[in-house]
Image (cartoon, one colour):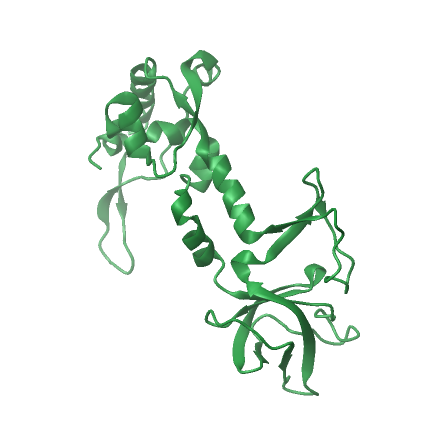
Length: 251
């Protein structure tokens, strides 16, 4: 994507990796906000819903006839500046699998401590269930969940166990198992308020509670990222000029 945008950034010496000699590179953390009076002028902006598959450069061309104003979307939308551009809907499942690649088991047994004397199922512990072994990545006692890196292999046995360095074998009974991205992150009521579960009775969830999975959360956040404001085509040139002038003051 050819653009003159970075011509407005100062150049600094930067060492990449273990390179001893610094090379000239744009200062990417240089940033200025549009003047507050401009941001307060709501007549310059309008709402827009990003269509699945649209990129910043293609949307810039669609709205302004050039790809050069792609940066303006990040300038006036803090949520995409912080979280990135919306993911195409057809890529969301693959994104969920990449972000949450492990397996999640749920148990009604205590996975926190053994009478307060030592931690049960600590992070980093290798555990076994049937012919599947894996390493504990995270545990969530308030949900009765243990997240395990099994290399993607599903756990089908109903018992999860390990043998500590000292002491007897420790095990729990599995009441549910799923891919991490499809496991429940939390429960909500009808108003969207997070609800706690009854400890050690995680298999019994009130009928009024709504399960929200990791994938659901990713989809919901992605929908939020699709809703942006844009600078109206009639105002883009003046805003771009003002932005570049402010950037050049920092060279």
